Length: 329
Image (tube, rainbow, N blue to C red; front, side):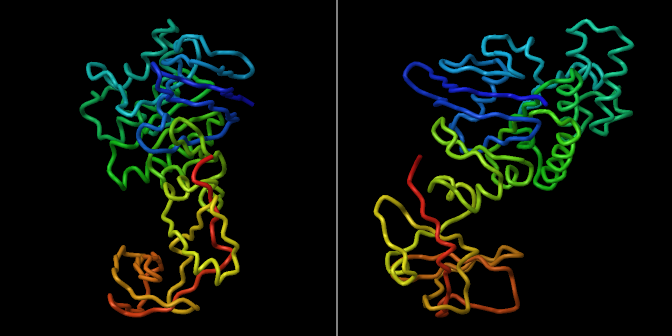
C-alpha cells in the first residue's frame, strides 16, 4: 500500500504564511483539498509535487523523505488546471513526452502510451492534434500523460474547472472510477463543494493555510467542526436564543448555533413566521421566513403545495439538528 504523508508542513513567503502546519496521510485513496481562493490548497499540491519547498516540515512517500527531491525524481503524476498540453505535439507525442525524457525504448513507449490512452478511452486518437479535441478530450490526454509514467501518487489541480457543468459531472465520475482502478494515493484540489462531496474518499477543508477538518464527505457535511466549514459546504441558519430556549438548549457564548435549511420543516411545528421571499430551484423550493427579527431559510423538495410570499407558515426545528460550532479551530 502506497502512503503519502505530510508532517508539520508550513510554507511562508516573506512574513505571509501560506501553509500552516499541515498534517495528513493519504493511503491509496482520493483526498480532496477544498477551500476558497487563497486558502493554500494549490500551494499544498505544488509542495507535494516538488515545485515548492516547505519552509518547515517534511513530506514522505512510502516512508522515504522526499521533501528536497526535485519534481522529476519523485515519480508523481500531476494534472494541471490548464492541462499544460503541448499544442505543437499530437496526442501520442504529448502522452509519450515523459517517457521520452526517461529515455525508454520506442517499443516500450508505444505500449505504455497505448495502455494509458485505453485507460482514458482515447484509443484511436493518437495522431490527433490537441486543437482538434474537445475540452473533455484534452483533459483525458492530460490525465493519460500523468498516468503513463506509472506514478506512485496522482495530483489533480482543479482539472474540471474549464469544462461546462454537464461535462464536469461526467468527467468526475470517470476520474473517480479511474482512481479506484489505479488504487494509488490521489490528491484533488477544488473549490467546488459538490465536486468534492461526490468524488472524494475524504475531504480536507482548508481555510487560511490550515486544514480545519479532514473527514469523510458525509461527516464533513453532517458534523462540521467550525462555522466556516458549515457555511462553506452547504447553507446554514443562525438560530436565535428564543429558539434555543424553546428547544431546551443551554446557550454558551463561546459557540454559535445553526441549523441546515433542509432541517427547517415548513407546514407543521411550534414556530410561526412570514414568507418574505421564494426561490424556485427546480427540484427544490427555498423559502425565506421572517421569524423573531431573523430570516430563517427552509429548503424543501418541490411539491404541489403552493405557498406564496406574504403567507404565514408554521415550521419545525428538531433539537438534534442544531449544530453547535466554534468560530475557528
